[in-house]
Image 1 (cartoon, rainbow, N blue to C red):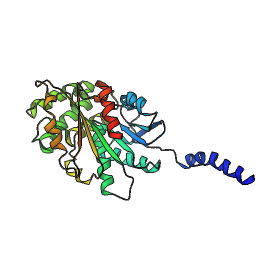
Image 2 (cartoon, one colour):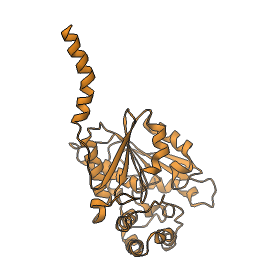
Image 3 (cartoon, rainbow, N blue to C red):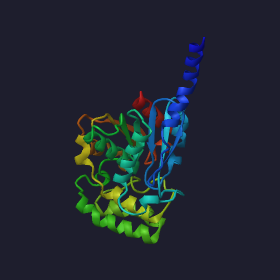
Image 4 (cartoon, one colour):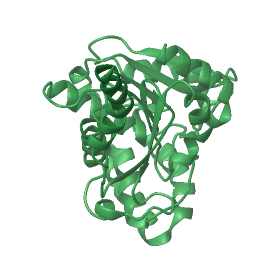
Length: 296
């Protein structure tokens, strides 16, 4: 009888003990909120967006998954913390991996939108290179490519874009949000292509100017194509698409395919008709169907 009582108490108390042993996560670069129970899914927003852009997606997932909603410090109303100076994408990717390790997540799925897609790719590439560190299970990038300017001009290089990115950085730093609204058009014109909404409709929620300027600079100049061979997990690429031949989004298929050709294993591509940059908001039902296929 006593033995049965001890076993029963252990079954009740062990989950609470295990939870207590997982340390609270504190970071000067990201804020994470957790919802639901089940397999782990990490959602990373893009430039100048907070986790609010994922609210509808999280509502659909948190009955089946444990959803980890990331906000990058300096975006929205979240204080900038350590993001106030220096690089952004690389350090944030490192913090995502530190979060995975500290919370003892077992190869979570990572979904990143726009700049968040760059963070997801960088985290997966770093994990692939460091097999002893925390690992991700699979990656979905939403309207993101390893080198964003290649969606406007396939032959563009970092050297081509860097002077424009420096101007964009200074304009956003000193002129504010309105600078971003015109930068996409200017970039498209100077690279000889149409920028569409890849740079022009970023789900803008504002934030700290220094962090926003650095983020915009890195979105324009980060080239992860040479890091793709380090990624050893499945990659799904979701992007907005249009059947209207006059739209720049009607011509993205080959550009996205070319951007991911260095992966060890071919990416799975899911184009979402009727969506532009904010795919999960523009076409939520079609987007969730793609997420279900990705997680399934």
